Image (cartoon, helix red, strand yellow):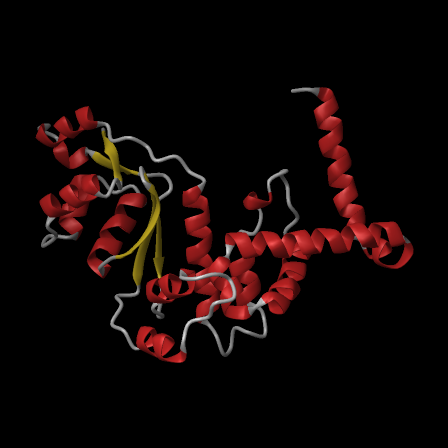
Length: 251
């Protein structure tokens, strides 16, 4: 690695430490300017990574929460899109959580979508599917897209997510639209991943959620079928190929 680049990164790290230190708040006007600029940049970054949350809480609340977040989670790369993972925790600890507990879970969904959007969809290893004919197929493991994230919630996240992504930043949903979503019969289980056509979010059944969760925990096919004796593996396999969840099989 270039030693000059190392020095630059070290300098940036020290600069950020100075910008957010108590001494910078009270002693150096120049650093306070940098600090304010960084907080404004942080707020803009959050509005891009979390457009639904931005619509839900507005610009002023977003700025306050961005300040709290950057005081806790400093940017470590030159790309602001990499920053903001802890926003869900900031929302959960904020004054908004008691009346709007769905906000922190919506932030989880939006971060998963953000991460998926910056991932590459892995192609299906079609040759590996021949392992389904292996005499020890019960030992075969299922490989899923690395971008695949499972989220569960007591709130209709998918309906709220879709509703708030329509229109521009200032166009808020109507009250009757919100009422309809909050009184819908969503399952509360969601899947986020990167497909060949872009990042996607879908609502899934609890059965699919538990099955996928078990795969991510490393259970091979034999253990999966023992844990889910009534599960329609053939239908799921077809769905997983069509939806590009499946990357391949391995022993």
